[in-house]
Length: 249
Length: 140
Image (cartoon, rainbow over all chains, first blue to last red; front, side, top):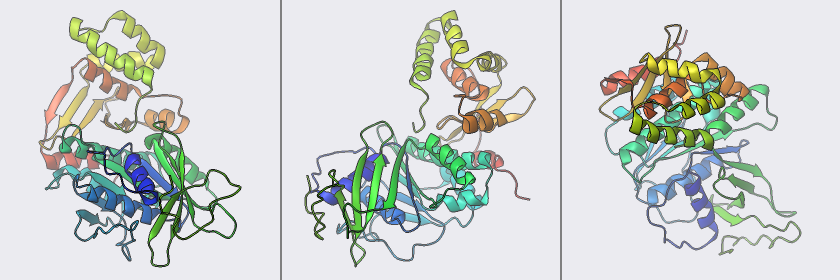
């Protein structure tokens, strides 16, 4: 999943080269950030990216129906026509049931499994053993889908977790657990490369498969997401013209 | 695979798989390596394999889960795809303290994969769902 996210983030800032055939999803990815840091939007952008690649349906799990469809990164893909299936397990028990019975579901296996709001499901069951089993089941479900997709194809997994400004001890335990199971992580935090600018800093750690990379994510007034590589020099960022997605190398 | 074992463990297991193919038993040098890497868990894991305590449960969907009959006659569920075991030792040593790599049940599962010896059980898709769900504690 880390690779799919990297493509979303890279594509937002540069022309799409489209030369990769059968791109791999990459290792399971954990998306972390405080409330309002754009996790759902990024998750949805990844869903659009994967669905647009036509590898197979995308399964998006979240507790509540999204109030509005987050805009993607300026693509013309219509989410309604892409194969994105939404399911809304209302409780941890229902999420367990969904994952445990995933192999019973008819139809083609998803190529991407997304879960938004893991913290809400974990909060219901503070016991680490239960939390570990839930996370293990997420991974096992994605592994099963990969198996069903056949050789050479993988089902990616991307999970969003809301963090608080100040971590409680329960959070720290869960985080250690999650970092054990999710080799790749992407942190989102409100930040900006220069004074007077705003937006989010997305920091992707692909878990040993590549260097850490950072992007600057902003949202236009119409909700569209703009992505640019994070300027490496803090001194003089190319100052925030709105068209920051216009082809930064 | 999502969660990967440390490279040295992966290497040992695949070397063992090749060696076992030839001689149908684990050569001593690998037993030594196992003991070195895993301490007493190695002996306990080998014991579990010898006693045929590992069962691979699969359903027509292709989904699989392992169950290991532990020493106290308790059955533990192991997910090999992501290295998870329902035993308390896993929860404590592996998850909390992070000083152990695997519990003896998971090690037994990997050894039985290497040696291609474990009980096999076929169940229906629905039964597999129930087996997986059983691990979730019943809500009061």
